[in-house]
Image (cartoon, rainbow, N blue to C red; front, top):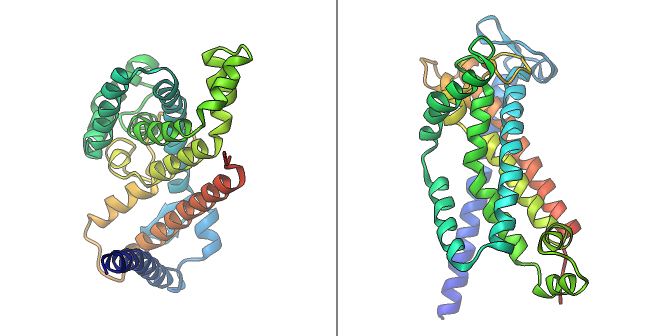
Length: 291
């Protein structure tokens, strides 16, 4: 009887999750249809042009997409090497005492509100970059400081997932490597990391998805106006930052500006869905199974 109740509860929870996702997709699709079906917006122009000015009916999404991928790229350049290094240290080098100290610190980083990270980027990272590269080079609002702090935010996620993947590698592989004369570093880099590659890659892709969906850091530190630029020291608005700024204004319901928020949200959904599909494929394709 108890087993049936638990099974039913788990089935109910799974159904709720699926229905919630379908509901989100339905709302995004319905409102996006109103946006593209208005006759004022062409899908090809939406995806390929570089001017986003709703006041003159110009809805080119590329400036927002470009800024989003710029901050995400900078974040991953910070989070991937640091996160993987921390994971290797915790898995291969750290003593039980060191692990018990470092893991809670990483968890504290993950628990800090993102709005705090946003003001940290604006009040600490931006002045630091301006002191290094020059006040005339680095604007007060810029994608570089937002991306660096986003990397710090994602660091606990990548290090924790990567460490789990490294710890799952059988001890016998390490011992075989040591028996052949390999050092601890050679074993970690050339044996353990390749054996855990599928899990590490999944951690990286989850981190990318987290960076793309980050809102408050970019809303505070990156800039508040669409700009198609590849200079990380200039201000540029991301997709999530634009949604926050526009939704907080005086938008009338069912206006084209209001519906554009859902079109951006739908594009974000498809980007993260694609990343998750790639992650699942990579895990299944390269997963190592040990007896």
